[in-house]
Length: 510
Ligand code: BES
Ligand code: MN
Ligand code: ZN
Image (cartoon, rainbow, N blue to C red; front, side, top):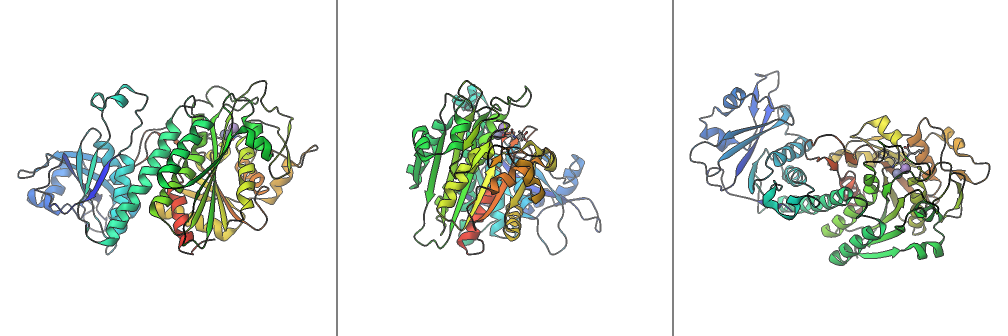
């Protein structure tokens, strides 16, 4: 994992492989040309104040995602300057947006793959900006090489940037130190979630996932309880058992609890953990199953968030529930037409075995509800429909409480995770009426993401505030990397969940 320090070293004397500076598109009201962002003064001075012109000659415009490399001026102990685009220059008297800094830091970190140490001299207006740059750099410096030759021997490939020195902050200031500590805890756990998502399903099956959680629980003093298939039968978890029944790899329900002696509130997080979604008997066609190892991204996000909360020692109780199963077709698989008796006691007619996420979540939501937490948030790669609605970078938020849905949306926005509120239209509920059981696991095709949300709502305990995050779009990046987002598993929702725990601890939520 990349190391991170707040550094006081002045730019010319600092020893590193590169120094990262920010450039922006100047406001049209002024020249409109490229602007060198604050933080790069020493570099600009060494270029006789002509750095903006030099960079423009090299084709730089300051656009987001742009990287321009140039040799460092003489006298610098750092050979390379990396100028990264921050997008439009902020209005007069305001500073760069934290998310612009986070993305630029991530872009720069990716451009420095293979380097040992880089100094980041991006514009920091306050401690939160230092946290954003730290987070962007640590999240950008990610690669998943465990299954490649260079995973065993880093010399054979380009390992991610090993060390980040943040310049321009206040290394002795408590707020700066706390912001960087937070960034480190969140980014490290988020990167671990990415590793889990990227791990192929032949190695990451429910039992293996549960073992990873148990090890992390030991390391961080968290209580971990694992219900294996026998315990699930005994407990009557018909949803998880039904979905997991077709696989040789048996399902698990993992409960991971963080408790603080100073907690006044209890937040429950529930994650969909389908370690592979073949669709089951309602088999997915080729072209729709190659990335379905990502179907445990919700559980990975919940796991990472609970560990990060523990590392930060937040004054709130947080319980994570991971509903782990592999959805496979076989002679023991659930059939379209089967009726499952769920943990809540309700019966569900399974019309499509590919609508499996809602079945495992239903049991976990009911289990979470039994403890009467102040709020429940579930996270799931639940529907292709949500992807069609919001695209591949934005997740949908549904809730049984408008104010809570707004609060979750605001938290997502604050941490830089694109999300959007979605409704739960009552008229869609009757589409799930079943002639045989209490409810069917499918309804109208139109608005499929909302139908899934309405199904989940039936398994939330009476009077409990609940939100559902459908992360099917942004959980797994099939395109090229951008900002601090790599190809593959993204770790979407981890940062929203940590923020929600912080807000709950502060008494501002639930
Ligand atoms: N895991 C999928 C949803 C998904 C699709 C996640 C694409 C990420 C990318 C989910 O289990 C599923 O198959 N949903 C079905 C539901 C339908 C059968 C009602 C879907 O969206 O097609
Ligand atoms: Mn499915
Ligand atoms: Zn699925």
